[in-house]
Length: 124
Image 1 (spheres, one colour):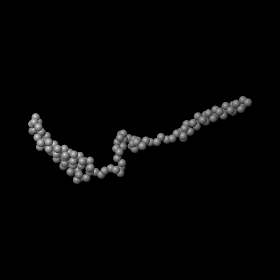
Image 2 (tube, helix red, strand yellow):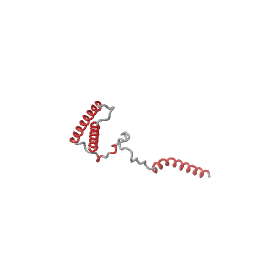
Image 3 (cartoon, rainbow, N blue to C red):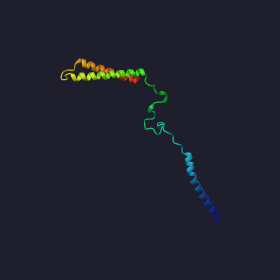
Image 4 (cartoon, rainbow, N blue to C red):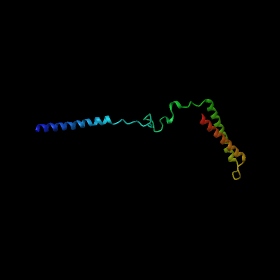
């Protein structure tokens, strides 16, 4: 009778030890691997938000053509010249009275040229 109790105790202890050893391997097999986030950057070393900045490789625009670039430079130079002249005209006028109509027209011309440059840059 003691022999059967001893065998039963050894069998239960062996089963418990086997369960303790097998448990970590069973849980590792049953736990699914974590899925990477679709928003995670491809380059883990890149600062947040700078991973291609929403631009795909095939969607990149070609460089600005030299003709458009020279047109932008000349328009910008013209805008600078017009604003410098406008500043001189404003400094020479007497602002206690009404603004002269040519000064207002000149301001509209400057604004029109600035918007034109902005549209060129958007389309370039």
